[in-house]
Image (cartoon, rainbow, N blue to C red; front, side, top):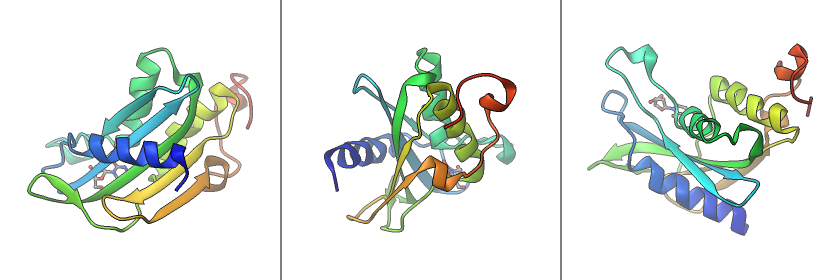
Length: 151
Ligand code: THU
């Protein structure tokens, strides 16, 4: 695992400890790397009205945006696993859902760069590395509306 991946996966695993996931019992953590080397994290926030639940990646991107850094996202690490005793477990690799891929595309096109996406399990050394453009090819995005740049 390269240093960037290891850092983001470790931060995502720490973030998953703050997941609010009493309905699915599935904790997800995400850690976004910004151009200045800082890292912003998020965890899933479920809701008693299930469909209103927010994914970890979306929370992390919203946090970066709230800090004025939507266009500065370089990479994201994502982990997830079933919770036991409040902590995510398991080695199965978790990848961003379709909606989160679209949310990530907003950051990618506003920043004018493709994003590296590191995916891992809650535990173990398994790692899958992608480019967002491979996870969401030919995306619709801000560039279609004359904003940002196609990537
Ligand atoms: N979840 C995420 O946080 N990110 C994803 O990319 C996939 C799913 C969350 C939503 C829900 O709280 C739980 O995982 C089970 O679907």
